[in-house]
Length: 89
Figure 1 (cartoon, rainbow, N blue to C red):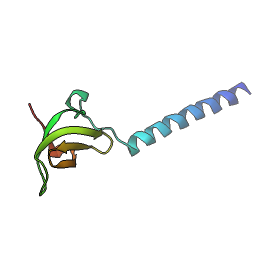
Figure 2: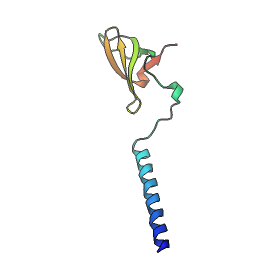
Figure 3: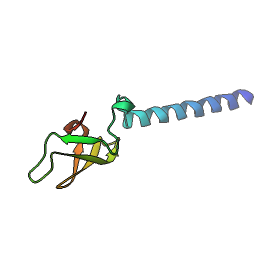
Figure 4: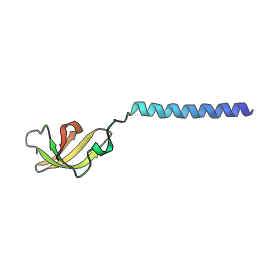
């Protein structure tokens, strides 16, 4: 009996580990240092501004899962992917 209980417990642990692995594969994390991430309040330049959109502004929202940030410019709000935003030094 005790062998069966130990075996069932081990199977449950393996199922839990497989579930965690599946979540990691489904939603991979990006290898970005936290210090390099955009944060709310950072001034940025917009690398691809559209017509009637500002070229720079301040980050108001950041979504690390989608890789997008909302920037408030003088002409309104603009949402861009991180690679289209450049931090001002």
